[in-house]
Image (cartoon, rainbow, N blue to C red; front, side, top):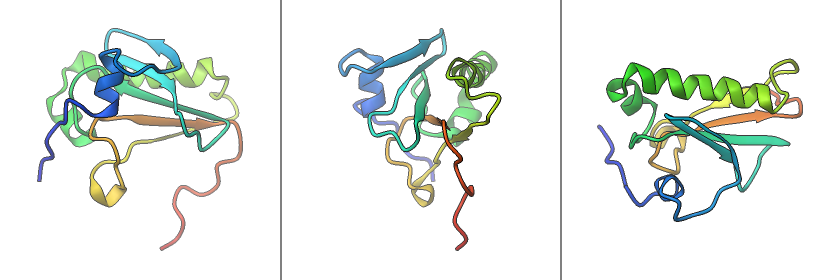
Length: 122
């Protein structure tokens, strides 16, 4: 079931400049900023500038330029953070079973320490 985009979600408000962020980089299609509650020494969020609920919505409706722009921004953020060589993790929760908290697509970039297993065994 498709979820509805909430134009008052925290990331939409950041994009409109209503809430400040500690910006890492901005491109035509993406904005990257530090997470306010970091879970690793490096924890940066990369969001598309378009109104997309999650990865499913984004990959179904975004233009090729938006898709390329978002993923190029993720790679650039990791390189700028010095995480490309030692390694980093990207994560994007999609929907309630994945515990997505904000209904705006966002990709977490984690780095700066050994990150352990991808998921704990069930």
